[in-house]
Amino acid sequence: MNMDLFVQVLIGFFAFSLLASGVYCLNDISDLHHDKQHPLKKHRPIAAGVLSVRTAYISSGVLIMAGLVMSALLNLHFLILLVGYLALSVLYN
Image (cartoon, rainbow, N blue to C red):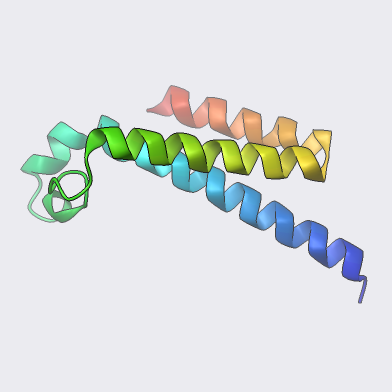
């Protein structure tokens, strides 16, 4: 087993996971009004008021930045890939 490759894949996995989690927070913020009306989604932390919108924005920013920094440490191509994913996700929201 190539341990260096394993570590790179692991870093890539965590970088993408952090970025995707940050995007998920942004999506929950943008869907807040609709989620409050939904019988199941109204129990999500932001819609239920357990997590403030301000805290969600801060958390999202920290998660996204952490993912981007980790991907930049991995290599430039992976950073570009994650920036593309981020751009598409933000445009989707």
